[in-house]
Length: 217
Image (cartoon, rainbow, N blue to C red; front, side, top):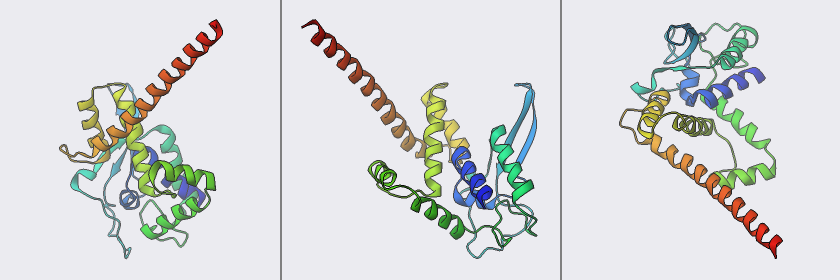
């Protein structure tokens, strides 16, 4: 169970997968090929419905829109975790979905939600208080990992390209339409973080100046 949760956690946090996207993946979602431009092997994950069989679950996970079906790059470290889970910990179920339950059935949305409820219940009171002060919630959900991924990736993109290009890259990575306003919500979080950093830097500088003046007296 630990490896299943670990693999699910990393795929949602680093790849920004929605809960339904994660649970729709087939057991071989990662593909690799040689990138001639970079002169190295690269891996990507194909986000789509399992092409090998119909979904037997009562509450079928959904892939939100046609744009949500996409191919996104995946790092070697995440690939190694997914491979380890599939080879050593997934078991040998008769179904072809990536996420397998303890009863050798495709993992359900309800089961994944319960996992995060259990994770939240293990948080300390102090952590839950800080979480509530920042988000208005005292628990962690699968979608929170997608939010974190979006803010982090936009922040990294803005260090390399302009805003408009960064927003389009974000739309492609997270499966939003080219005209979607969703990236702008995360842009606000990025700039609030940058503002806090700039404010703290100026505040520290002002304190040092005041200390210097005090020393002169």
